[in-house]
Length: 66
Image (tube, rainbow, N blue to C red):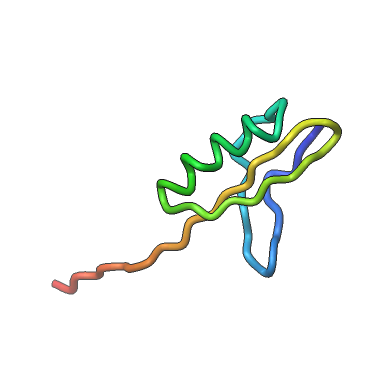
């Protein structure tokens, strides 16, 4: 299996976390830890494995002018 590095869901780009999970439960557990770190996740089943795609939006950018 050669997963796509990135996918688009609802016009938003998600990046693969680089692992192929054997079960949906395993992928969901890891996904929960990403959610706790303020990531959005998408879970895909592909060729009997489960892939986790994540994204995080920068909420605020601070710029200082000198």
